[in-house]
Length: 140
Image (tube, rainbow, N blue to C red):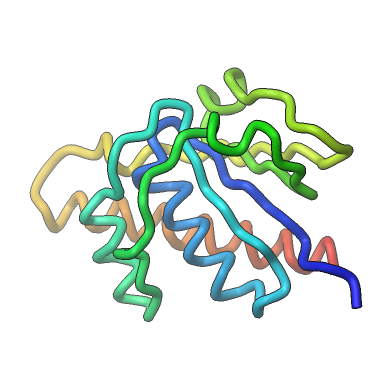
């Protein structure tokens, strides 16, 4: 039986978009994927990302923000950048993995009341979910 396919989700801070993508891919990928996320300038897992993922039954509170530098010597089947900065700054990884780019707005940059900011996080979470579902259909 062949090994699991490997995917790395990459954004600027590894605090929201890539963290949600990691959690969603683990859930939707049905155990067939080894999933990692990282940031160009890692910071922390955003509390609102944790909250909106919990709403859909996915716990990302145990995940931590990681630097892309931690993965430079690893091979991935797919490296998916989630923002333009990550796409421009993405290093070259060993092997023949494919690079994909999904330009998503940074929910951590949202302003307004907590309710308004949560709505932005939910919108991005749902966009990521749709993109992952379409990605999984395209590679199966």
